[in-house]
Length: 270
Ligand code: AMP
Image 1 (cartoon, rainbow, N blue to C red):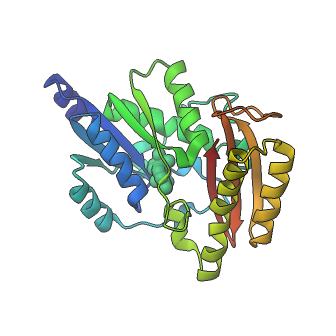
Image 2 (tube, helix red, strand yellow):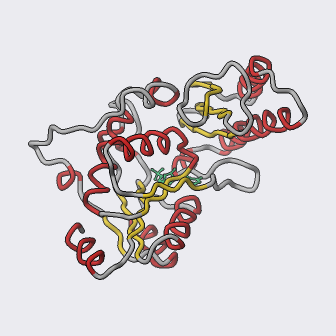
């Protein structure tokens, strides 16, 4: 892959990359379209990265559909798919990790210790392997995007990081490979996440900006939908530090909750 990328760059091609764990959906494919607009050649990587999963998480049952994914990539106009094996990415001598020390601590970092260390390590490796000029990440994983922006800046990766809008089902549920785990009842409950976040956004538009009141209603709404809260927080959208007052355009409401055993995340920036 790295040789291919170097050869393409030598020919003057601008490379765009989309990093995924597969089981592709319209959210992933929207990133491909943004990558296509911003580069000559699009590489999609497909790798379920073990170092970003904790022992009790869903690594071993993470959904896979290699044939379907390759078909979707072909139809979307992806030029190269890079699908390494675990042993190709992590040799038995592997011992080097990349870590952000602050931005990875709150939100998902607090409930999934070690997760972002796995993410920054694999993203660094995939950046060095694919040599992109542009990399597109979804705002659905808002903290991941912030962590990767921090890392790319701190380590001087010569890559433009683009954040892409969240793609949703008609009823508002954010698309996720993990939605396939949901039973029909859990699926009905899961829509409560986006409904509650949109309610907060509308409240702010109507002039209610007191965060303690908004957060308490938000949590109640999630609870009343039968969802088990992991966290619901209100932080500054750039550095992810807690906010006590609403800041126009910079206020991130981020939620993680369980519908049954499935952990879902979503957010809005207001
Ligand atoms: P994943 O395969 O879940 O690791 O996601 C790969 C990339 O797709 C990440 O940059 C995600 O943020 C992005 N992504 C996943 N779901 C969505 C969505 N519903 N809308 C936009 N981007 C998404």
